[in-house]
Length: 412
Image (cartoon, rainbow, N blue to C red):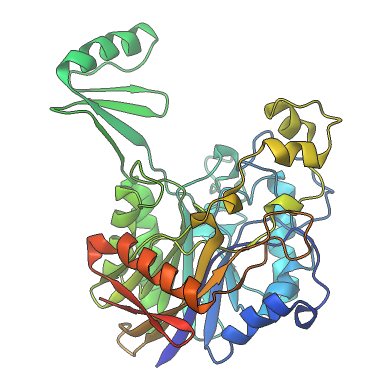
């Protein structure tokens, strides 16, 4: 039996000298004692601002200190996923440095590499499991590529393209088709494309997503190769997209998760929207559609390029406090303040025999507070509330969450 822990996003943007000196971090470390391996998503490139910001960010130009790799190891994590929308915030140079820094810290990473083959490959973790990672949310410049026709490869992330499509009834589709064609878009009887948008003719208005088959096949091939070793496989997917409602995963993410398990994965760990989503038991395996953010020091970033200020309607000489006063605050919402670490017991067949979760809550919205971005262990009342919310979010799959001691028990 292998006990595996999975967590969501980690954004350390300030140095932590010692985990034991921060009681909330020490509590997280204590919760991971006894697991065979633990994985999370590292959402910050690691450097000391030597690299110029890329022309586009994943939403905010994030950065973590070089000490972050060692801090994550001390926290109790065995490996990190790197496929997300922020790894490329400071370009190829910072990606190179992040990979080297993690290697020096002895912290394996998956989902990013010096080329696409490296980024897509499974990573062995402590001889206990294999980790495969991909992201459906990314700026185009951060995608890894392989060498082709003499063109050098590009470092970056293992991306899964997920185009949005819209359905319009005839009375709306025909004028839209005329507009798209007039603007130079592709013409079609029942489907037109304009840029990243696909518009289809249908009976009623609607919207959705589809994952690119080639990208999904690449994920599944890596999972199949990893499963052949006999070790459990964890697939980490960073995905902001929903089904039109933030609390629900997109149809594309559900498809990716199911196909990953069909290929041999034991656990699919999803993150990105900075909030909890439902849990599905699928073919005796587990899918966490949204684990939330475990460490969320977004508002403790010390430097941002002028572009971030002007995009917010501020002059470049405005203060960071001015900027954050105008920016959306995820932690200001109750749903954004909840997060969890999932714990799964995996047998020799790769099936999950028991699943539970430790819940955590962010309570310091003021980013000047020293514990901002670091959650506390959920209280008894908070556990009940989170169990009820998780059961409601998991209703499409029938998963039940109940309080069992200091944790949540998750059952199909």
